[in-house]
Image 1: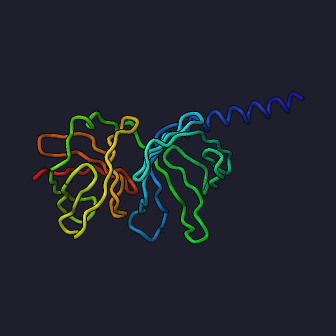
Image 2: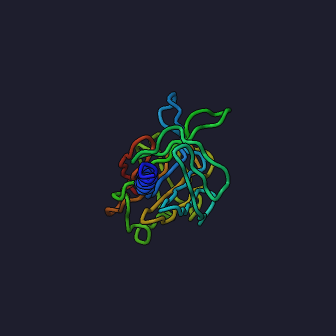
Image 3: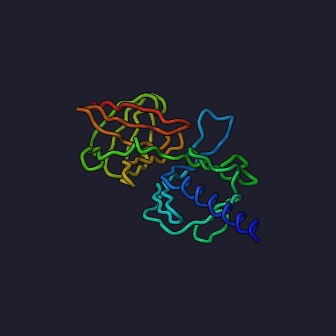
Length: 208
């Protein structure tokens, strides 16, 4: 009997530790294709996990929320069917198994608190043009309105979404070549941005 109680306590303590490890804000989904220079993000979204409750915001949806549960093998949102872990979650990433057609893992990466910013209300983008390097090919970026931007070397306009989520000033762009962007602040005519392909990368956008 004593051994059974000890086993139950060990399982409960391990579960509490895992809950704490998953608490935080995550961004994805990245595709873990080792043959690509950077994993692509298709229809990106940002996800907050906190003690069994989640909320999420994506490029094409807003204000999703509910509950989640998980075991050592899988993770489940709102009882919609489990997502099987490709490997054990760690402090930096959660990886789910891919599908039969696309077997590469689906990855979410944790956002550090250092990317949080109060820039959302202060920094205005609409009507501004910027040059930048380091996100994709050198280009000029023009924020035409609150949802459409254009690139100087691309013939068609692109949809984007800027929003504030759990302390992060986020930009998602409907272009798989551009990873999620996080605005950290503005210094005169320079916009400080961090992109998140495989690793965090600080980039400066120069207003023109």
